[in-house]
Image 1 (cartoon, rainbow, N blue to C red):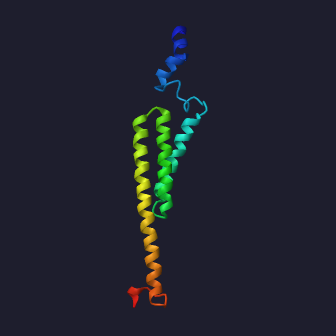
Image 2: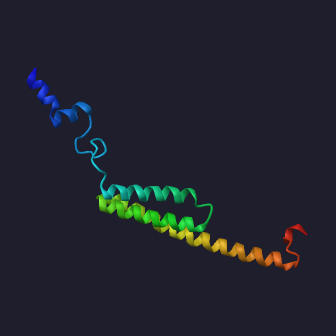
Image 3: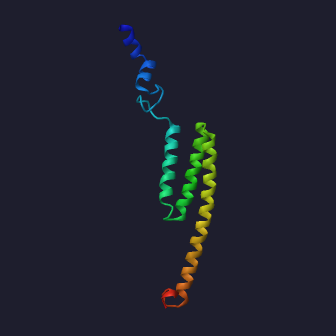
Length: 127
């Protein structure tokens, strides 16, 4: 019985007993490394910017930057397919920003010129 207790208390058998690997940092109280924190920041920034995209085209550009950070994280972590996909998403988001910026600018120009056309500041469709 003493031999069995020693083997259960050993690192390998305790990992098997718990079903958790011994080298996983969050389960054993070890500090999280900088790369993991970088990845967490990149994904959190992507989520926040994606949620705010409708407020301004600048959030679309920020989403593109966050996707770029996610791509860097993917390559640094060794998950190159993730890095490639995030780089593609970053390029798509930059294109979406360019289109949104152009549409926003043209709406501002047409709105200001059409409201001033009547001289009263009233929108043309209300007359």
